[in-house]
Length: 510
Image (cartoon, rainbow, N blue to C red; front, side, top):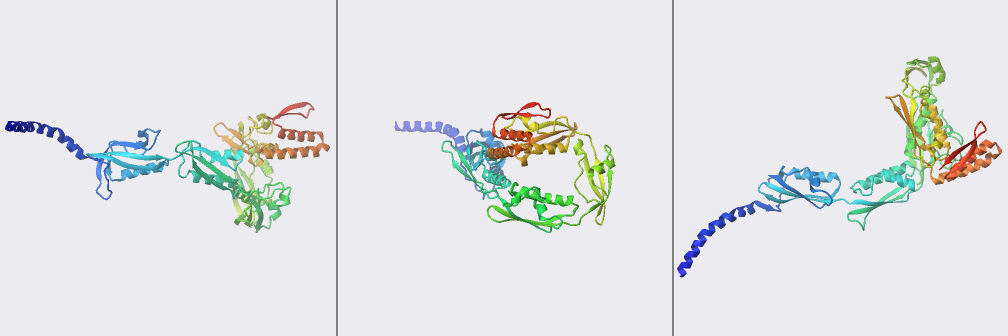
């Protein structure tokens, strides 16, 4: 019986064992070819593999194929392991600037195929921005200029860039010592989001303590600096604490300084000193609120006109142009360009004065004229006005659609808009856009409204003027009262009298 059982078992083993060996042998070999979480050594020889799959972890809200596409890798691509393709893929993610964590690992290697996993960490988003130490208008400017928006991702250089832009903005406003600090803190209510606190201490505006000019003999210091009622040749740079500069702006900015130096050279050129130049200049701190300015000038020689000839003028005669130019033989060589063409619609004209001969202190000029067609005004737009009715501002403009382009009309418009008292006189700038295709010109008037405290000052000045002028003429009193009411009332209807002694009703403000 025992012998019989043993033989049965032997037969069973002989029949079943080959089946099990046949069935489990391929699985055994497959398990040997699959390497899970392989240890890839950069010291060994690279192995060429085909990418069998790409998985992405650590980021929510985006499709895996979108994030995987940023790597530049794709399924089926042959890569070296280890190799430069994986390194370049990591660099692409870093260059994107949106991720705070990047790594690529091999989940497994099956035969000649490699399965990759990209581990990413997203940079936080901005949930809120708080500005401290700024007025409303300044805060709006900061929101526009800094480029930081709610909901946007906070990249590594964004805060540094915002500090630089804010510093530049306040430098241009005259706040050279402004301090900017941007603090980042986690939003307790939102995951992976931060709140930015922009803390700005503007300090005091930088002003000029002393202007020192060296080498100026033909143009005295008083003519360069200006007086109480006259503008100096040094532009908008004035000394603080001087009675003669009581009503002039004293702030110092780099832009104003550049413009002042050019204005000084233009003045010398106007007086015949064509070779005038600034040899050296410097700006040094006097204290925390003031700077000292030093300018050394080489005036050069004074030049005179010997002969003037005109070439290319067909619309007007040479005699007329000579009369308009107001320069003749023996006069001081004034390098200001003639603007007759510009004042009569020839905006596409060009006058190129060429010095054809210089003998000693005498110059022969050839005025080369390119006239072009006359241009009419097409569109006249007004930007930056949300306090007055538009027709109130347009009444002060001497540039009407359909009129011939006229530079003098633009100058008069600038003066009249500035005298209204509602807009910053320094910011009244016409943007002139010639249209060569149809021979027209568009003018965009870019205005900037005064702040409430400036309007209050203007209202008080207008009130004083109305009282002081009451003893002169009724028309002057009416004009002063109009300005006073317009500046102080959000909506005012004022009656005035025209030249025909008829009452005319104008709505001044809203």
